[in-house]
Image (cartoon, rainbow, N blue to C red):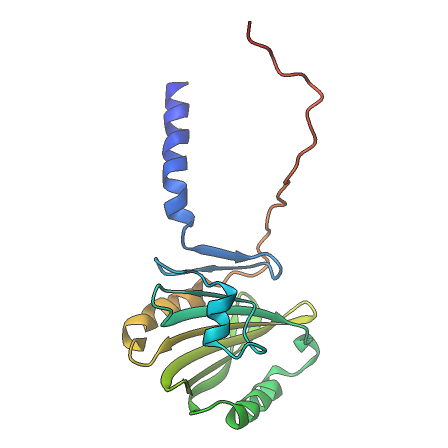
Length: 193
């Protein structure tokens, strides 16, 4: 019994460290592994980093907010479109709307048995230049958008971590249902005398 209790205590002690880097977006069944020290940004910080009407649903970043991973699920059904043509359309739209755009790469790739658009580019916001890696795919009847970015100055140190996040993407992750208020047990608890 002591060995089982000791094993359980060790597992509980190690669990937060092991899970600290996993972030799951239940709505999309998506899980990614994040670098140490990343945390969820509050809405006020997201609105400062992005245009308030265009900001993503969630952003996770380092303490300085100079390296971030954003996630959004948009109500656009990409499944019925040819992604090669859609990639070209995205590139044309970005050329019109993204300040300081410099293309690094635009391609299709296969990950998790799913086709993704990968767009890499430099952009400029508020006088700061960013390196962006945008990944887009269809999830059911919606469009999943992940944007991994860093200031250009910090990108050489952040690139390996951001590419590791890309490789860690797991789709169709089952998220257990959380019961907030379970029904009371009909069996009475034993009373100590």
